[in-house]
Length: 345
Image (tube, rainbow, N blue to C red; front, side, top):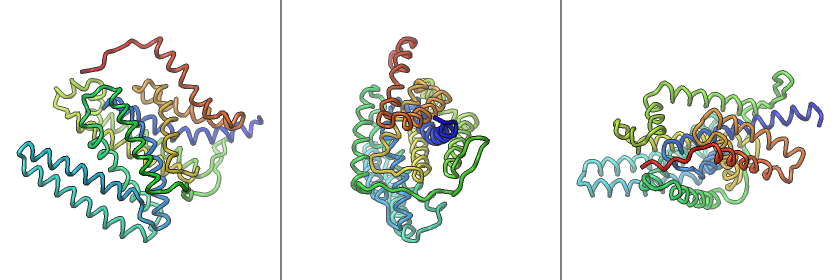
């Protein structure tokens, strides 16, 4: 391997690793706050890329129908729950709010999609369509089981992943899509050659990590999430609603996943099922961080990206095996060094 090839592989690995790092952070966030191992995190990557691809073709993305359907089911649950409590005003507010949101989403997307808006507006529209699915999925699948064990929540995650993958096939078909790059050309950072799109990916990932750091350190919602992650019972006794913390964490995870898909769409062809592998590689990074440490998880995900890149050069047929084998020594080391703690509550 020549130095030029090594630099090229390093650039490729850093680009993929930046996306895996975002997914690892989202997985750590969701697990720390809700104890959910969020396997469908990768589906938001695929949905984000494929929704943007649909908008660029002037089509109404299938995720709109998923959004409307999920919103309708959640509205029925909220209205029935409010009626059981005898709170007619809350039932009216929930039903009316969902109806207005659904109508705005339907007429807005069906009117704007055929216009083939500029790329920035298409990205914003994709985020507005896909990101609300995060809190809706939490309300529908996880919030009713908030007190269940980690194993039960993991089984629910597998079910949600399978459902979202099947719906992805229904809405987007088996054909993959690739979106145009945000920029053209190559930029040399010292000896490291980076394409403009890779630079976009790395810079955007770094910016999102900085924003997440500021959110957790400076905002009251971020501090509430950290408190919930440290001790859910203590946070609840302090007046922090854990259901709201779960909704916020799932919204952030969906935002990160969708934006990751938009970033990676120009680099690789995305299929309806591609999200699982993306999410799994982010999960390896999250495991390296012990599902608790954000910096170690991000660094572990970058390591996964580099390992994948160099493996694809020297043993391309076994690159996935090599990447996922990385998790074994980490799990062994953690099992030998970690102290067993009974599940809270």
